[in-house]
Length: 206
Image (cartoon, rainbow, N blue to C red; front, side):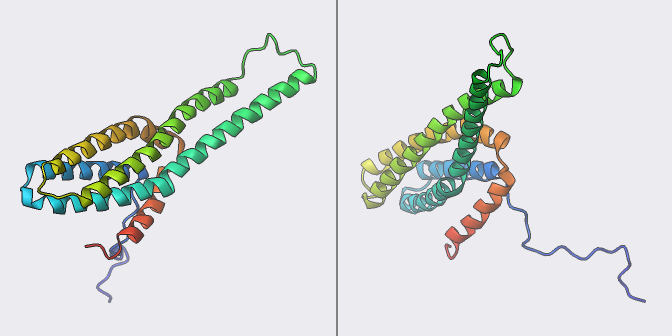
């Protein structure tokens, strides 16, 4: 008789973890970067250059994931909402042209919802646009940091400026973009794409 009973399940295969939610992944990145800034200012001065190099790697991967996958998904959703609103407006105009008496009619709930969504998406479209600009400024500052003398008095000041810039960026993302993404997007599917892309970007990095 086989020692394995019928009710015994085969062991789960290792390395088959499900990809994290996109918003969860990005928040984890934010917390990791915050820890690196804390390490820079509270750690040994001789380790500062190494910490900055790690910051460069983390921020580069994070920005790539957002620019290639996360932000475009938000923009695509905004375009879908805009198209739906335009279609509803055209249908409304068509009713008027065909002589329908709609002057005293109450607005349709779905049209009101679409109009509200359009306003909300207009706001976060501006935030996404600003986020792209933030990324460019961060890249320029990181490039400057890598060319600076790590023993100079200006070096920690430049890192403090970077920390402040990223803190503002993170605050806007977590207050506006992330809640919208959780409500409007399949963040699990996006997280899977981001997870796969991260593996490509970090392959061979110690």
